[in-house]
Image (cartoon, rainbow, N blue to C red; front, side):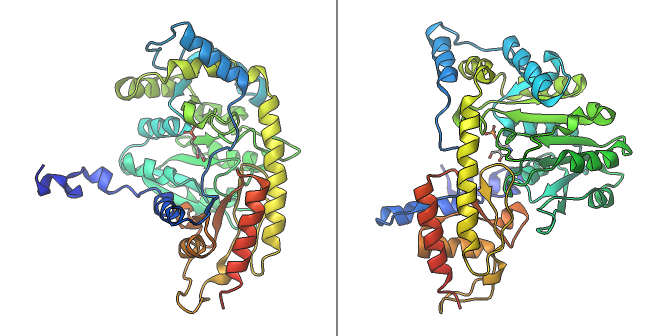
Length: 404
Ligand SMILES: Cc1ncc(COP(=O)(O)O)c(C=O)c1O
């Protein structure tokens, strides 16, 4: 291959314009340090450290043994679409038929499909921030324009209805958010979502993309609320969910949308040309997922215990400000107190740099908040053992104490 053909410049503009994953540089550095013999504690990953529940694995094994090996319908096997419709009715007060459901290769795929189906070049997508890194890149791929609206630390990183109203213009097509949230762990209450819905209600051309992938990791008394259950906006809400976080099934690649029929059909049409139906075996496993909810409940309690552990350890570090996350498995402390401080060689400028410095000095991998739209914060995954979390927070505290 000639040198010319190898240059990245020959990639299509849409790919050159994409950001690299924020964790790539950290992962590379982690591997280098590990190869040098350092014991790196990795708190940068967004995935459960539990196994998929046995009844789901058994159903998938049976699918293999029984020869369920072939292409499935693009939108998912009928029994899974029905199980999802039943779950949405039972747990979320969402009244959709199986034909309103499209199963995809992960919630990420579902989100990207919806953006491709709804966003025209120049359309604005309001993203409630801090937000999961891929959202703005998905919008970019559709030639849309992200409008980032930041929830303040004081408001538990949540956007108010006044802020939302101020962000909506004639070009707004979609408002998207995740609750429980990655990276903050914040949960929008029913009252807060009703207030946002009041705004949406009067903007009749605006759709809501509600990412509920962390639904089962919710520590509030009130529990999860789906904005799509509000009748006045129901037809304009696309609910996205999946199996990765609640059932510890990240590798199975299964997500879904529930939406008005014309949107579901658009997603099916797109998927039919690009990926087809997701894995037949994964789908057979997922059909039985809701038959036993003891594992999601057990995992939630473990994440709750670890949240309390990490928050208490963070509160013990001078200058660190932290909210108590109501869900997901992340802590998102504000560490801006350390900006401008130095270890004699390096002067810390922002969270991303502090994150790299902590990896190099304390051998703890986390993610800087810059790529989540929150440059004062660090994301710490609590999907790790109590011992690892305790050891990691101790190392971070010791390292930060050397910054003057
Ligand atoms: C907010 C959010 N949405 C969606 C996803 C993607 O989920 P899946 O693995 O089902 O594609 C993630 C994964 O990290 C996430 O954090």
